[in-house]
Amino acid sequence: MSAADPTTRPTDASAALFERAHTVTPGGVNSPVRAFNAVGGTPRFIERAQGPYLYDVDGNEYVDLVASWGPMLLGHAHPRVVEAARDAVARGTSYGTPTRPEVELAEAIVGRTPVDKVRLVSSGTEATMSAIRLARGFTGREVVVKFAGCYHGHVDSLLAQAGSGLATHAVPGTPGVPEASTAATVVLPYNDPAAVDAVFAERGSEIACVITEAAAGNMGVVPPAPGYNRLLAETCARHGALFVSDEVMTGFRVSRSGQWGLDGAVEGWTPDLMTFGKVMGGGFPAAAFGGRADVMAMLSPEGPVYQAGTLSGNPVATTAGLTTLELATDEVYAHLDKSARLLSEAASAALTEAGVPHVVQHAGSMFSVFFTDPGVTEVLDFAGASAQRLDRFRAFFHAMLDRGVYLPPSAFEAWFLSAAHDDRALDRVVDALPHAARAAADVPEAG
Ligand SMILES: *Cc1c(COP(=O)(O)O)cnc(C)c1O
Image 1: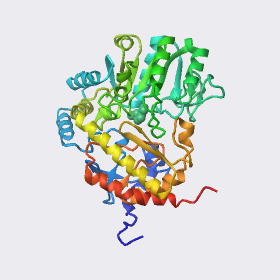
Image 2 (image 1 turned 90 degrees about the vertical axis):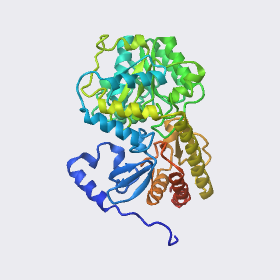
Image 3 (image 1 turned 90 degrees about the horizontal axis):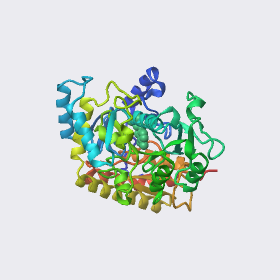
Image 4 (image 1 turned 180 degrees about the horizontal axis):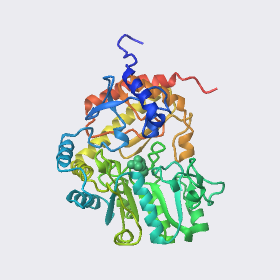
């Protein structure tokens, strides 16, 4: 280590808050991955963020590659979004009535995607939960097919693991989910057309919907194989099931029309239902599900399928979301694509130089690095994503953190960029990568 190497940063104030948090909150956090359990060490308590940077309570600055797990497409505290939200707050924060920004946000979503109508909700979890209820109500069927490694929020029926046989019902993925809740869920491996064919051959007439991440981002980035999403859409159509494409993460991020803009729009197919969240809330709790007019017409109060929410379409959240979408121009997406290419190539080059086996995968501007075994060239599913050297990721993560780069504190997450990541921020990441790659290389071989 040369004298110029940064030393480990102070974390006393974060550590003190984490201790206090532990006495009043399980694990000290309000969403598990924030606790750093996968990487160890003290989670940073952030008190302020601006553009591509986070500032913690100890006064450390970090280049942020988490972006609040995706929402902050424009970077933090974008002046126009702040101004719009501030003005909205001053007009009152919730009325429990319909409002203009809800209409405008719905129009923006309908304008960018193939959905005919949307219903606004407050979280991605609510969106997928409601989409599944609607799919079941519309089809009069109960079975839901999902894919291992795809995350759709903490919906009981989707917190499921594969059962013993391919087409058999899933089992709860966490205590607290009744077996009855997963009895009508089937979990298949991702990117496996034969498994989809087999389950439809056996149970096609029982299947209400297939739900998939439009491009998997919650097991690290695992893009759909070419034609895979189209196969899902066509298979569903053939069997009278609905195809639900979950774009909570990819929506309005990987293109102005999300992942659908990169595949369905090009290949000429559309999902029956889609779910959105993250970017569309502009950093506030707003999400949506939408789709075919005839399916959406089943939703209360137009139809019989019940769904509601006290804060749904909240005027502050919808105003911030709408402003974010208005500012998400073609230039923004071009910048994200270019920055993602630059960083992913730099990460791969640094790891190669240090002799660390790895795979980098993309879905548009979302990408992630898998610390694989030697010889692996591609990660296609959750089994592949799970076969990682997590000890190497931990060393890599902390070396980046020490040099002021805040990566997702888990090996199973995408690295998120924003329009605010300028040359200074990107250079900081690029400069840190060789150190982190060497730290990963220094981890002893697993015995
Ligand atoms: C984040 C996410 C969700 C859940 O959204 P929340 O707002 O955290 O409830 C659902 N689906 C996907 C693909 C996500 O990435």
